[in-house]
Image 1 (cartoon, rainbow, N blue to C red):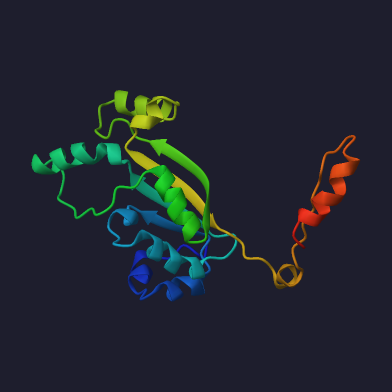
Image 2 (image 1 turned 180 degrees about the vertical axis):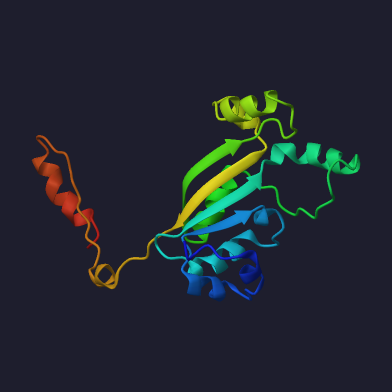
Length: 184
């Protein structure tokens, strides 16, 4: 696919406008939300680079694992990283909505982040997606799309309102109802 470019080409990018010229099918945000000072502004800056068919794939860690990652960093089992944000799925959906995106799908993966032969693969593949176990997973994967703007034709048509009143034997109350309703 022409939209998939070499890493050396990606290094030349200077802004999101450069990405927009590619008209990407997918934009992968692999942990980016953990390092941004303002996630909403970051997502808003991505929006102009998106076509209606563009999909945003966001990979982020569950806040439940924050103490364990700090412990792994202290024990030098993991490199120290400057994570600023630990967002949960509901917060991520709200941030996406504020930035003009809607969540299509949200998956939870990885219960055992270490490679234990046979066990970690089976647990991560089959057990992690199950309802109770997904609460304890480490990795969240959210797929989002830009919310389509209204066309110019729809913006010119004024919205209409219908008022439906269920009434039976209410002849004396119908006329006062019309008097109380504001003009719409």
